[in-house]
Length: 387
Image 1: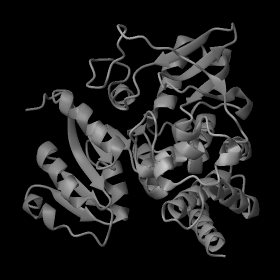
Image 2 (image 1 turned 90 degrees about the vertical axis):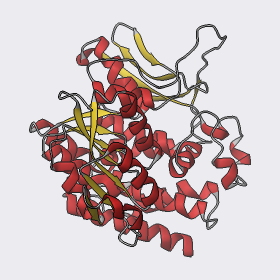
Image 3 (image 1 turned 120 degrees about the horizontal axis):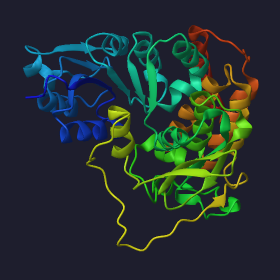
Image 4 (image 1 turned 180 degrees about the horizontal axis):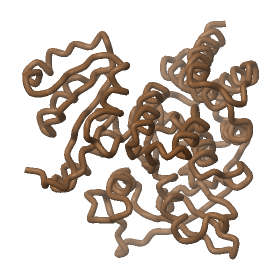
């Protein structure tokens, strides 16, 4: 039985790679955490298994066409909802103090904002919340609505390294990137990249979409935008370097020339647990580095010719407004088209750039305007693919 002082948690996207790691962390410390609610899109059988293990009060299946039969035996003791609109219900209601936003893409945007509006601590693994609606998030936080702790390994690293000094003494943050499977492939040889090659990440075991983003380095472009909002930085205070070993997860340089780096094995359970226990630290089920092994750290500049997505990321970080939601939505749709064999690997970034350049930019959009542009950008990419 969990202790009376355990922290109740909501996990949005519990069947994805981040969500499964969250539950792994929770299961390793049952005296510290309880699960109040879980959500999944269409993996109902896995969600049912998780529910039987963690006994949440509420479950949401966002796919309205999903068969809920695997959940039938749970209906007597848990509230079961179907449809994406119910995400806001579990994100903002109940006794949970922490909401883990682990739904990839824009699908979890409203629920993440609802959690902040309700005064929750948002443990954020969803890049798109800040990329698409960074201005809205900052306003909520400035008004005292909730708090935000990053789960992304890079932003968690920055969050931790910033504690070594005063914010006004920060010169820049350095986002490290593994470089994905194509860090050594010449730009001239990228035209014939296959789906299997793009999904063969050398360091991380992640979901399909984010693995493709790592191959194009669009994930790092989105992280540049996210860092701009999350840490209130100018784009010229953000740098990206290739670090193939994925041991240093990001760095912060201070005015005196000191550079603080957060190091650790490439295991998402480490930043997840830190977000859940902050400001405490405790033993983690994640992998540890062994000082009995020989290993080295190397860095190299990010090649903008090989990875043109980076330029888009810095452009959107400068522009703000509606640029983020358009880039994010266009990329999601273009990645889906690549995975379906409809476009080539090197078409992903040009599709995003074309949609970004033709959208009606607004510097201070409403949430409804952002969501409308999300749909517009997806339709534009589909039109571009079908031409």
